[in-house]
Image (cartoon, rainbow, N blue to C red; front, top):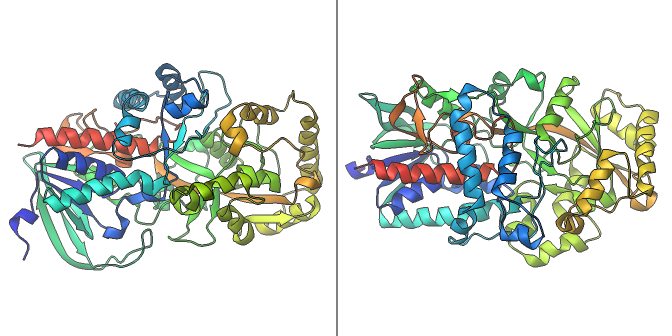
Length: 556
């Protein structure tokens, strides 16, 4: 029989992902009682962060300094502002969150994590390089710090802390509890109610049963919504798709499981919370269909180095600076305004060996398992990393041929629309290849390759030595069809710096907090229009910590 103590707590957290776990553990550490509610089973503890590459945005870190990277708060804030493009009245709190987060990344973030056992791979990645002027989009320096252990490594400290709190009685997990409504008492959020779903043994990420076995009601002095975004609900993605990015894709692949459906966002909005910047979102253009899927329509993102040649569906090379790793939403806008929802990489075996990584903990067993022996093989293997070679062999989007004639024929056969003209593709590749003979060039992508190799981290593991694409010594030739991959919601519930949610009337709703992706990773959209990468997990950490500490102080 369920006792009253199991039905009430000081705080309820809706969602057992990273942001929810951070909030819950802060509350428990403050000596308060917290209930964590999640519609999925215990095997999904940690949510989407488990599947991540574990990248974290840090500023002026020891890892950067060892690689002779000169970074600072001022440079990072300049990059953030140039990337975010804040231009709305609604951006008041998002901008304040952004500044607070960049300061967090430049000060206590690394030490706070390190005290819990978190460690970082020593080579710092250079994501979202921008390619515009100094005040435009992009990271001026490498800031993408990969967690040693990838996604599982980032959630481990908080899973451990939560399980310890559960043993002490300060934290109660209620898995397979799906929230259907927030409870309001005299304008204050005082709990949640919903349905209990039947137990499930499906593995993490797989679609679980929605068979209802009962209902529940829980009470508390505060509720923290940590339910994630909408990336698994493609109808909702299309409904919120901004016209500035062209027409919404007719076909997309899913970078998150199906249960990331935005359902709790709708429930919270119906209770009166103010949802802002819902048209801001972050989807990738380098998506490939998973040959060994875990969830429906499962896609994986290629994390590319700078050397692959990028062509649109009609075979026209993407313009400067829309090169691999430079400007995700700029690439998305260009591709979608071209009238098609896919594009192509053309590259060589030498490029794929050194430059291709796949996003996701399961695609990086060396880093995820914390094996230095396996990780070192990335630089010494004759082929690409094992998961990349598996996609090259089994992935439907990969074409491998010995000649350009055969490659283009295979690309046309895969797309089924015969848009690519061999002579046009050849002319563009040969023109690029002529630029390789000198260390000084006018081709800005080749300039970028030379620039990347001046950075030791890229030279060691992320950027191939410049060579001609059509040089047989670097073959075979490889083409990859790139699909639109849904991922992150950049807008969300408007919150103050304590993660307290505002209502439609502009006033704080007593007892209601929002964190992580549900809050646009803080304030209702701290990234603005674009992200600098490594900032999504960090936003979960920062907003969850703020909410947990504030909620713990607010309850009697």
